[in-house]
Image (cartoon, rainbow, N blue to C red; front, top):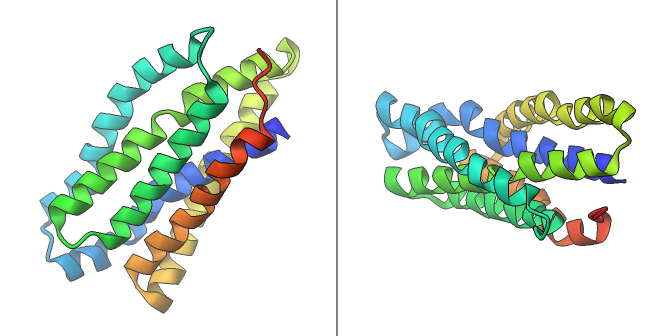
Length: 183
C-alpha cells in the first residue's frame, strides 16, 4: 500500500508540475504575458524554490523525530492548493507566486518518500521500490499533458488547473490513513 500510495502522489506531483507547460500558450494569451514571463513562471521560479528547499526538507525528513507521513501529506496539500491558485490567478505576479508555491510544496515529496521507502523496504528490494516510485515521473508528465490539453480544449486553462488540483487536495487528507511510518 505504501508504494502504490507514494507512486500515486508522485504522479500528481508531476501532473501538477507539467500541466503548466501545455497551458503556457493559452495562459500567455489570456493574461498578456511575454515569453520572459512565461519562462520565469514555468521554469526559474519553480526550480529555484524546489531545489533550494529540497535540501533542508530532506535533512528534516532524515531526522528521527520527523513526521514523514505528515510531511508528504502537507506537501501534497500545499502544491495542490497552489495549483488551484494558478487557475485563479488574474495577473503575472499572482501566477508567479502560485508557481513558487507549487515548487515549495513539491520540494517535500521526494525526500520524505525516499526516506519512507528506505525504512520500509528490505535492502535487496529497495532499488526496485525506488524505481516503482519513480514511475510517477513519466506517468504524471504524460497525464499532465493529456489532461491539461484536453481540459483546456473543452473548458479553458483555468478549469484545467482546478481539476488537476482536486485529486491532490483529497488525497492529502487520506495519506495519514493510507501510509504508516515504519519507525
